Each structure stands twice: as structure tokens, then as C-alpha cells.
Length: 360
Ligand SMILES: *Cc1c(COP(=O)(O)O)cnc(C)c1O
Image (cartoon, rainbow, N blue to C red; front, side, top):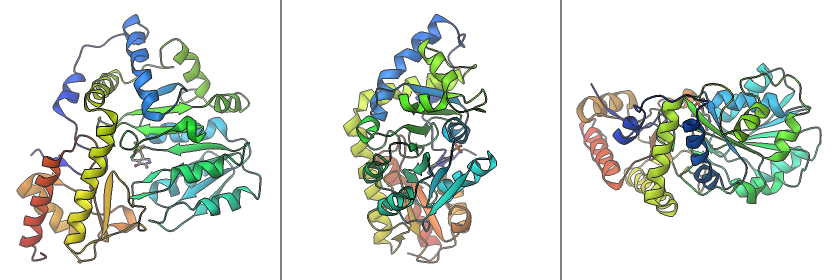
């Protein structure tokens, strides 16, 4: 049975993207690859808002997220935590044997700039991890406000995860003075999983050069050296790079502003639908994500039954809550290629299922 995903990653992949992946292989040291790699840089840099290189890592986002920690942390990393993915970053840092400390907020609360400043002012830190869009609870922190705080601490490198917001809202890495930004392929870019984009500032690379034990596969200096030759350190996932090329073409055709506006509009459509049916948003007011809505299950819906009926009768799948929020929240993605029509079809189906379950 085929069905369509409206979960916040992986999201549905278009036929056009899937077809792009079926092109014949090219050698990753060939001129054709170098031309392909270099052709992607300007548009990727525009999406990140940077003049720094954009490295292509073959792994899911966590590979690069872990790798950058091992590249830049010499003293101690502060992990801003407000949901499952950001909480995990502390765990990953500890597993790497690094000195790490939490800056913990309740799930659904944004990272507080004043609290970040107060903690960094204590000293001892040389890196911070931060998630822009905490997908597990649909909470989007105020990146410009946090970046302003980070700029006050010149010795502290910022490592920012935009895995589930990248390309859906404007991002200005250089203007914000951010050091490292990481994005995955299977969220707002609507590619299959397995490719990670990472951009790193010159001072990040300078720091990495002083850090021992960077390893090989995720060594940023290897990425930089190969980038200069239009290549990746090891054989990359070439089909996903074809898919990325195809997607950048889609983005060009739609226009960046139109793309950002579409995500904002579809997000609001879903939010209004939920509010009209008596559901409240789980994250703090004004900090709801623009790429998904995480609703509190305020009507006490049997979410397992809802998803089962939605899938069997309508061919759609939403998320019934992440980890400890299972059954207590549900998440609907508006990432990637969704349109007014596809979102309307989902919401109509959800209405029909809610009636069947006696909820509406
Ligand atoms: C999905 C997600 C990740 C994890 O990405 P993987 O591709 O599974 O490694 C990390 N951070 C955020 C914010 C995410 O949404």
C-alpha cells in the first residue's frame, strides 16, 4: 500500500526528484562531478545566506552534528536544550568524551537569549549547540536574538542545527555571524534521507586545525581541502546530489520569496484548522514552527486510531507525538513540496476521520 507522509521528516518526495536520482552514475573524481558540485554552491550559499563553502556530507544529519563537535570543541560545549533533538546533542557530546553542559528549557519553550548570555558569561565555554527549529515539539527559537548574544562571546563557536527549517524561511548566516550551520535532506528540502549540508566559517576551520582527534570521515579540513577541488572527501551519495540539483531547480523556478511565503501560508492554514477544532498549539505562543504544527491533544483523541484510519481510508500519515509526547501531541508537517491543495486534502481527510471517531 502506498501512502503519503505528513510527518515532520522524512517528508514526501516528488516524482521529479525520484526520477532525478535514477540518472547514470558518474565518477566522484570526474570533471562531470566537479562541474555538478560547483554548480550547486551559489544557490546553496544563497539559502544559507553565506559566502562560506557548503560541504556535502553523506550521512543523516547526526553524522555531521557529531562530527562538528569533534572538530571544534577544545574546552567545553554548552548545549541549548528544549526538545528531543537538542537534548540529544548533550548526550552525543558526552559520548564523544567531550566536556559538555546543559542549558535546559522545558520542551516547547524557546531557548531564552538572556539565559544563554548569563550562562556563557560564566566562562569556560568554547562552543554552543543550538537547534533553530526543535522538530520534536514544533518550537522555533528566535535565531537572530540568540545570534546577537553569541556575537558577544568571540571565543565561542556557534553550531546551529537548521535541519527542519532550512530553505523554508530566510536564513542569513553571515549577517548573523554564525559559525556552523547544518541541514538535512529529508526535511524541508523534501529529498530522501542520507545527505547533509554543512557550512562552516573560516574561524571554524582555524579552530579545527588546532583540535586533535577530528577523525577522518567528518574532518572539516578534509571537507575544505576537497571543496577547493570541487569534490567531497570520500564517495558521496551521488543520487541524492542529483536530487539536490533537481530541487534547487524547483526552488529557482518558484522563487525564494514565494517559497518562504508558501510555507508560512500552509503553516497558518493547518494552525487555523487545529484551533477551529479545539486543539491548542503545544509550543509557547509565538514560538510555533513554520514548517510543522505540534498540537496538544486537548480533545483527547485516540491518536493511534486516528492515524490508522487516516492511513487506511485516505492514504495519509501524520505523527502521533515524539517520545514522551506520544499520544499527548500530534504533528503535521507542511515542509517540502506541499501546496494549498495537498494540505486541504489532508485536512479534509482529518475532518472525516475525526467525525468517524466521534470527536468533531
Ligand atoms: C530530524 C532532525 C535531526 C536528525 O536528523 P537525522 O537525519 O535523523 O540524523 C536533527 N535535528 C533536527 C532538528 C531534526 O528535525
